[in-house]
Length: 124
Image (cartoon, rainbow, N blue to C red; front, top):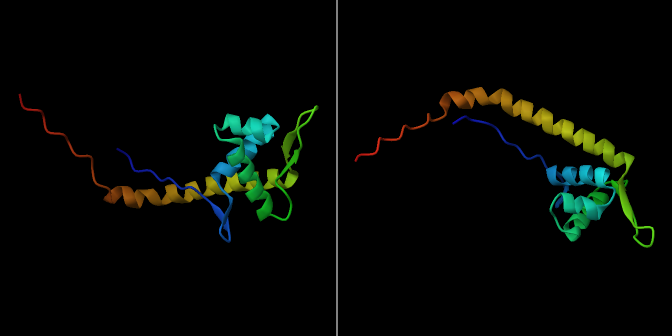
């Protein structure tokens, strides 16, 4: 057994989660897949859920993080805006920095952590 830190960073704007790991994953998937629908499939989430996350993100910031085009004969699509890419990069950097801070404090906790208990041998 080893002691390790685990932090899920979320940025709140009033009652909304403006940005977090799931939204960052969604932006990355949209960037790669080229549409909200395809990104939702990659992340194994419903299109409705993905669309709601995009709407929340777009509503929390001055500039939209995702721009979408309606479907039709040419098909729809979506792209992460330059602002979205900037915030995505900044968020991932924040995640790494927070993890480093937590890791730096783990030794103090590891010294006090309960040692694994040995299991008693089974009697026959």
